Image (cartoon, rainbow, N blue to C red):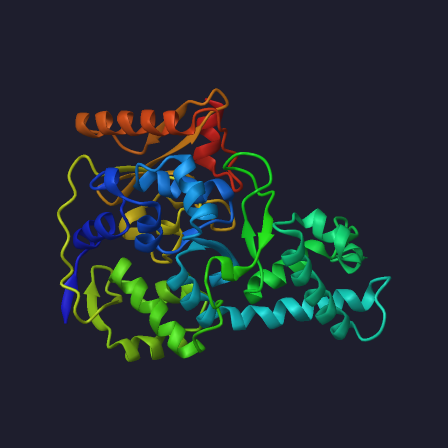
Length: 396
């Protein structure tokens, strides 16, 4: 059995996850998403900032890839999380995972419909018809907003209380829940926000087939899981079954079956866990130099996609994660997290390192912070899940 040391894993992380400056100037938006794959997009700004950290793409370049070229789909999939995915990876993720969450989402909506005023007849049939009417309205209205869909489809205006008997329970419309179900089913997709900058979630909606001709329902779950994990092991070699189950949201049994189908090879890791790599992977990557600096945003896909993080995180989890396990903005150097950063109200990008830095690291970090500050311009990022270190930087 080959051994994959922490040093080698960090070199591979820099190379495969594009966590550094090498090659960034000539890298296309879709190349970043394919290499990291998929990019977290629960927070709209994270989608842009993940690409900005790994390429020289402008904000307009990213928007063009998303909404004009439609080379990346914003889709709810693995771990019921919103991601940006290439068409190929979207098909694999959807096929492997979404059959698990769609019945849950539908059952929940049918339950709410049972208690809602204005629902006539069988609630399940009512929900089916509401979905059909909403899909038709998406096509007829040409990139409608949620409010425009609610105006066109009366059933979307039906209200229910998702948390009756609680202090925070209040009536809401069916609109957002039905759209969430349709997205998870692969019937509609989030399109360009009607207003705002890269932080906006004022989505419009279109057909998934505008991004993925033929739609997402192409692969059976077992075949899709094989395609998904083959891609993952290429981009993140050495992942354990714990890591892969965490990243996908799939049960470990399905992970094991897919690894066997791939013919994945076991490797020893420094933490004594078993990692997995593709059978033909030479595990080659250049040793990171002092210029391998990156400012990754909160919820970045690289740290969020790994459960066993000590080899790049060290003892800094309390400072960098919120109580729900969401990571904040981080400073990376040579494949390790060495600090955090944030953007202040005046637009300044400020950083904090855990240990004394070498002069070369300080210089590289100053350049990178200046680059990101200029890239953001007038945009002000509001982190959805603030962390202790990020909060302290904002208040200094």
